[in-house]
Image 1: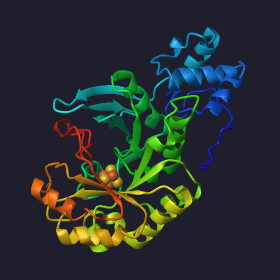
Image 2 (image 1 turned 120 degrees about the vertical axis):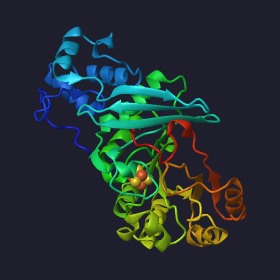
Image 3 (image 1 turned 135 degrees about the horizontal axis):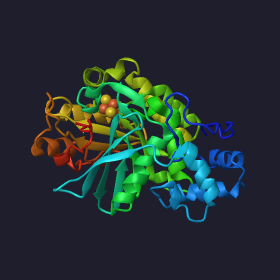
Image 4 (image 1 turned 45 degrees about the horizontal axis):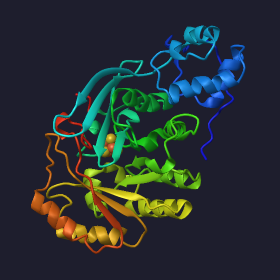
Length: 357
Ligand code: SF4
């Protein structure tokens, strides 16, 4: 498992660099124990604070009704509760999908989406502001990379959305803005907080981390034996095609990516899911489908086909007939195939459409 320091000395002061108060959301139980101890209160108070923020999703520090007022007053001197402020909540008029625009303490914007699909209500969390990976078809890539989100900024998306939506969140995907494995430490810390049995308690099988293919981090994820599910954005049936739409392939070659995906399977016993965004005239021919089968057909995996959500650029979604014909080629393959028709495209909440505009 990824180790993160839980015994850092508590510093009872504002963030030295910018004078901002430290958010409570994002603190582990162990860190909260150290904070309340430094403030002169018994350890069990930390568990109460932990449960108020992660189970009850309170809005303000003084809502913790069973915590001594003296502790809440001390906490308020140096801490705020939430690292994010909600700026806009946009429900789709066409589908049960909602988009949320937040600002972080330093003022940059991020987006979070929740979508209903059958019995599943899935929240799609952002992990970075912008993205450096530069996939050619993605709106977030056009923002460039601005910065990594902290674990608190990632988890607070869940807490603030759950406070405001009537849909009980059943699944979490790290697939919003950013490349999760380029913010590895904070993403794992956030997943551990989301999974913590004394807090939000989301089952590990309901948490999926997605990557465009950062090979060393996939290997690290496998070697550290994290219990979360892994999705890999593949999007092309061969190396040269992938290079044209995902420049990351020049650094992390396709063979190495396949090897890392297999390592994940061997160490976890779980099938990695390959995501395949279907782009008209780029990767949607029958020949492409056959090459894709050759590429992934020999290893245990699942395939998720996502018809492209247009962002007004050079790429287009294939026609219904072309999509059907591509899928029919995958009928008898030895791996499970699902199709994800993205939700909320009317509010630009579909896969690859997040760009805070
Ligand atoms: S698809 Fe994901 S990894 Fe690629 S540029 Fe967009 S946000 Fe980054």
